[in-house]
Length: 311
Image 1 (spheres, rainbow, N blue to C red):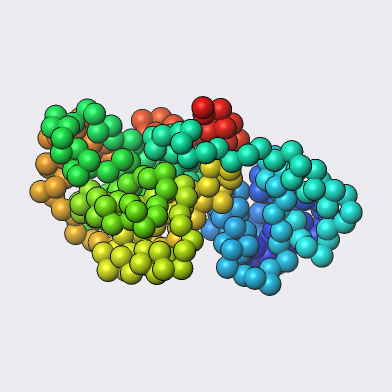
Image 2 (cartoon, rainbow, N blue to C red; image 1 turned 90 degrees about the vertical axis):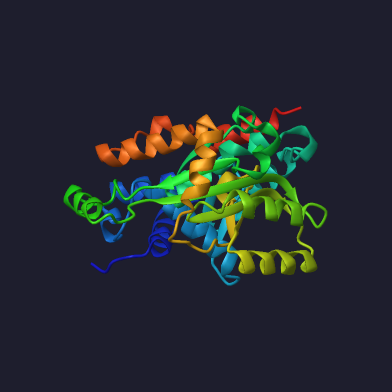
């Protein structure tokens, strides 16, 4: 049979099933009916990849037939199949919707699990929180290292012989990430936040400035795009009401050359960063990623529940 994209697979299953489904339910249906075999590359978490494709479809295609039903957990359906019962479900949810937590009710560090979830599910990046207070010279910590660092391995995708060959040639087998988090980005803190990210991300292959709320002012977005393009810093917006709806607003520019002087400096200043480097080295050497040694990944429902309890 013809190979299907994730979007084509989701459309086919939702049409056959005839009712809204979560991405996990869509993938379970695909497995039970042998439809998962029609998808080429699936990865370790195909349901997450499926969800990412649908969210991109919803965001970038104004004529898409997909709709998101804001139930708990989130479900997806096809517009032309929506009936009265589905509309009543959507209306009932809107009446019960909990007010979005105020930005003053939580701290920047409360956003770390949201970023770790997004990085793990959609970027295949394992993250490690770097605690500034553990730096030996705390007065310089905020301009030395980022809030979170990350690594993407090929270990789970490549054959052992290929890994050995790459290491023998001295090839770079990993991609290192740097993330700076803010609760909100507006004109009032854009430049300081951006150049803090530039300073703290110079050592990595890709650097990102991450926020849970972005000003949608046209002038602000134009300036954000200009800065991102000029310095290669990517922008990620988290969604504390729907972690799977987080998105990369502007992608980071990949840099192949790592800044070893800065890496050495950060490792001397902060033990968390040194532990991160040791962990990455051990995982490469053993050809096995010890996920429990990186930041813990919570389910999206748990993340939402936790942030709503913040006072």
